[in-house]
Image (cartoon, rainbow, N blue to C red; front, top):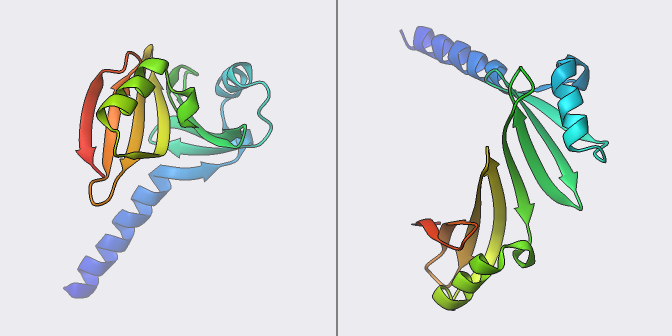
Length: 147
């Protein structure tokens, strides 16, 4: 019975691995998706493509910062996640961090774009009380959780 359970687990993991996050060659990306990507990011020459369910996920760097973008099979933009340095946050977000999180040091900053919605996730560190705070572009705190 244990060998059957083990075999089923291996099969399930193999299927999950082959379906989600599987690297693919750029030649396997549909022409419409590739054209949209090249139009959106014309300066990018080195990109890594993956399947994320039925969607296409492309990972690349701009100015030594990681960027991830997802497109549908119909070449529709789904979302974008990019690393930022704190100086590129909106001044409203920086003002809230400076006033409400004085004891914290900024560790990691990411910008998320989903449709027309832009949010910023900032990891803040202080001795024994690290936080992950999500802001909108006006500086409003949308979520704050321990890191």
